[in-house]
Length: 220
Image (cartoon, rainbow, N blue to C red; front, side, top):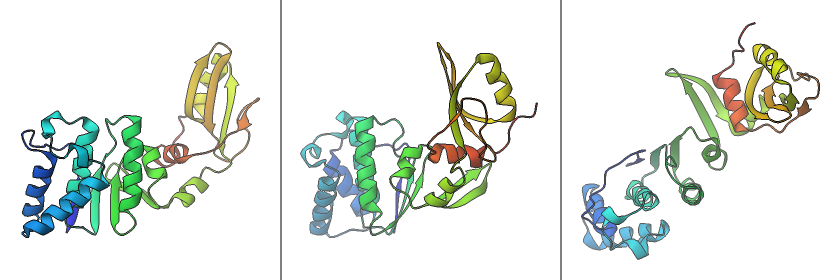
């Protein structure tokens, strides 16, 4: 059995959370009413929705609807769950809560997570694949991905006129204009100090993502 949590999904606003999950369980072939009731109750508890289970879903917040969606995906104890952009539109508290549930889900099943949010990957996924224009451009572990940019990320303050030159020769990961110049975060191709005043910086998944997805540096 496959579990699926899409980025956007419709819920029956006139049904309560428990009624909806009971209906989904029936559609998934759980015909024994006692077993359905027990499984629904267990999942509602896991997603912290027991107290809201009798309320109509039309009154649910975005985070509450997402929790019902998680319970929906887990009905029937599927061994494979596909999750598409699960934290899009959620506030920080709901994102953190989802990541905790995701860590629980992956203990005894395979979860395929599609997301553009590096923080979701960092705390949940042991193996990654990146796609660009329909083609897999990276496949491996987090550690292997981070190794690509180890010692190559630098940060420093540069004058605005120098920044225009730096953009031509280095991959700029981020920059922020300040009263003292432009705070610039760059990726050096060979790890050498990229400009005067630059200091080594900690590298992360977002830096590695940029290295894989945008390997080219504009030519002068």
